[in-house]
Length: 117
Image (cartoon, rainbow, N blue to C red; front, side):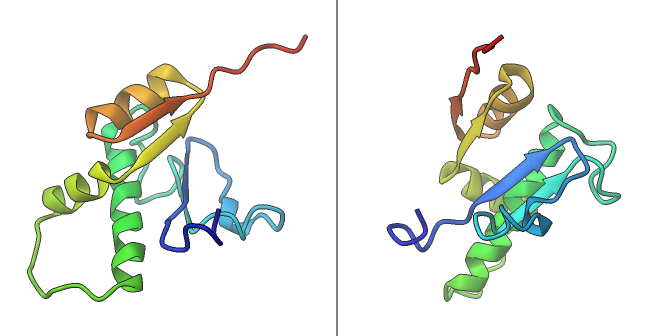
């Protein structure tokens, strides 16, 4: 993915304590991670829109550091809305992943996992 789309910013949003950027097998795949357990995020766990807003802020910050942007100031709401328009959120939980991401204007993909049991 990175070779074909080097401009992509890939992140993970979780209610767990893990940070994919710190997991050796995964850290090269992701640019950032947002956990509902982080002090700056808690108690805004999924499906709270606030954890998705935080993810959009982090992605926007990374994206802006990769490109030259104009000096125009944008509000936090404008920054989140702008980022959300270009976002594709993939999740496995309709209520926790798809509904809140879509509420912020993100495109969504619901991966419905079937029990293999």
